[in-house]
Every structure is written in C-alpha cells, then in structure tokens.
Amino acid sequence: PFSTTVPHLQNDSWGKQYSHALFKAMSHMLCIGYGQQAPEGMTDVWLTMLSMIVGATCYAMFIGHATALIQSLDSSRRQYQEKYKQVEQYMSFHKLPGDTRQRIHEYYEHRYQGKMFDEENILGELSEPLKEEIINFNCRNLVANMPLFANADPNFVTAMLTKLRFEVFQPGDFIIREGTVGKKMYFIQHGVVSILTKGNKETKLSDGSYFGEICLLTRGRRTASVRADTYCRLYSLAVDNFNEVLEEYPMMRRAFETVAMDRLDRIGEEEGPPGLSTATSAATPGP
Image (cartoon, rainbow, N blue to C red):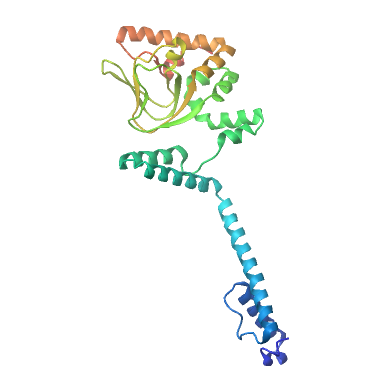
C-alpha cells in the first residue's frame, strides 16, 4: 500500500511499514502535517483531507474531555474562583476603594477558604439522621468547648445545632450595636470579642462563650455593643428558632432565664453589660 508514495517500503520489514503508517496517521490526527510526502492525485488529496478532518475532530474531543476531567477533580475550588471573579467585577464596577476591596478579599478567604459548596442544597437532599450526624460532627468543637451543650440533653443539642447559622466576622466589626433590637444570639466557636458598655468598660469573651441571649428572652434592645477583636467564627441563632427550640425543652428555657437573671443582678451591682453571658455562667444551671 505504500509503493506509490514510498516505494522502498514495499520490501522493508513490517516494523518499518507499521512505523511509517503510524507516523502518517498521527500527522493527520494531530493536524501537524500530512506525512513525509504530499498527496498525489485527487484521490489522495480527498482521502488526506477526510483523514485530517476526522483527526481534528478526535483531537478536539480529547482536549474537551481532558479539560472537563481536570476541572471536575476540584470543582469546589473552580466554583469559588468563578464566584470571586464576579465579586472582583462587582467591586470594579462600583469603583470601591482599595481598603474595602482588601477587606472583602480577606473575608472570602477566611469564610470559604478557597472552596465553595452549596451546603444548604447538599444537606437538604440527605435524610434527617444523616443531616443531624453531619451537623453534630461539624460542630463537635463548639459542643466540646461549651458547658451549656456538654451538660444538656443530647436531643436539645441536636435541635439547637440544626438551627445555627455559621458566620465570620473580621477584626473591628461590630457584631452587635447598642440600641438595636436583639434578633440573634451568638455562640463563639473560635475568636475573641469585646463587650463595650456605656462606661467604657470592656469584657472579653472567647471560645466556648455565648452572648446576646437576654435580648431574645426580654425582646428588648441591646444595651451594649460587641466588637470582634480577631477573626471570629461564630454560630448565630435567630430569635424565632430560639423560641421554637425552647418551647420543646422548657427546662432549658429556665436554665437560660436563670443565667440571664444572674447576669442582670451582676449588671445592677457592677454596671456590666446586659444581654450577655459567658460559658462559665452558662454552666451553672443544669439542663
């Protein structure tokens, strides 16, 4: 078959014939040429063009599948990068100042850590036992560091954890502002916050503490501000979810109220921050 284009191959070994045929086929498939010699005659021209078209199609399919495979290996990171590109375009469109852009960048890095998941959709597709198992595992450090949860009914802990929402605050952020209506309480997984009162007295809270629960019980306004001193990883609990869980566990409501009354008494004596509680005081009452 090679006598027309390469006559000497007719008497060569099968290895040389096969090597030449493979070289010519690869040349067509990779679209880098048509072999050692140009096609002769219209039949050779059309066969060569057809071969190159088939080869180009196969090559494009190979590149497409290889690209899709590489992207699927770390789809969460790719999703994060695509999301952050939109954020960058948004910041550029609104011409945000440089320091604000830097804070937004740092927030995304600390909040998502280079990966982004549709966690609500993933958990929503699971059965309730699996969902509760995952939430309990993800919040294991919070439960271990907080005496309120360590001494409570496991069913109450699970019910509370399923209502929590993860939030991240940067140094200098005001988590709670004085005079606002209390709609959330917060549990500190990691970080340090300062309680700021009217008398310029500061109280530090760190891992395993919680604050803001008294306003949920009294439906009053905040009488102190809370500022993040470091990057804080918190879990927030909305007032509706707070009341929903405590309706099922009245003993825990009484425990919260006991701690709240103790804190209010201390506030009256020391002019401390109302509406706030530490893990130490929360450990006093039983579940």
